Length: 287
Image (cartoon, rainbow, N blue to C red; front, top):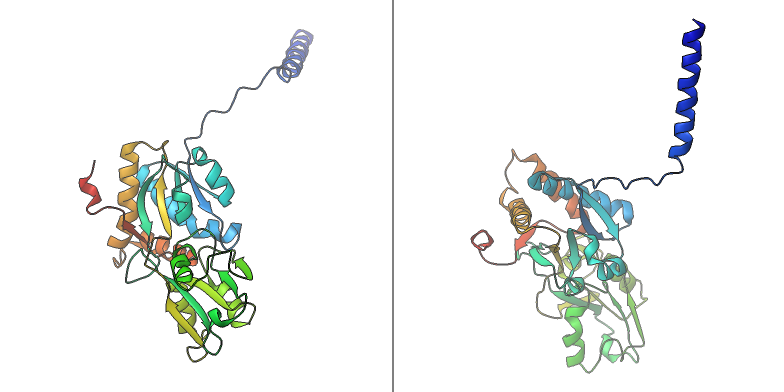
């Protein structure tokens, strides 16, 4: 018994010493998890944006047979570190900042017309914005076509460069929903607002934008606001799979047995997105 007790003491001592020595040794890096990173621009808060995109990430992950993690971040991060992501849901102006990225599909914003959405200008009927000295303008956001970029030609045609010839230029914070800009105009904080057609029509349907008081007119051609893109780190085969999966959301939209598609579309509606449209005709025929 004493002999066993002595051996046990030596074993315990060896374990203690071994543990102490191990803390002094460099720790090997954890093996890569294999998770694909889906970068998403923050919209209605970090948590709400993440919840809206989470079903899409799970859906794409199922198609790719990989885990897809959602990373909600700022436009600065998305612009300056495209190498940090494998997939991304990007607004118009950030797509050009990713030269190595491939557009898989465009986000549907304006049903039934599809992905393209027109910028609309809104202003009081009794006080047209171009009759006001140093007019104040609020744009739906900084980064999407329908949020302001698409209306530049409209303003220029009326003798106003954007932003130089306005007394005040402001940008609403949520690129997915331009209600903030519409509300600010309604409450008199600005003389004219620019917002996506879908958001203007929604505000009118909800009774927030009284057509008797406010003029709402198209201010430019329809353009794409958001794109699902694949980065250089995603192999060509995986890109095709992700593209097909995104486009299948529209294909199976009305299939009563496809609950997963219904969940993805319902969640994305929190960001004003209702599915995806192809970047090219018959994409499955392309290499």
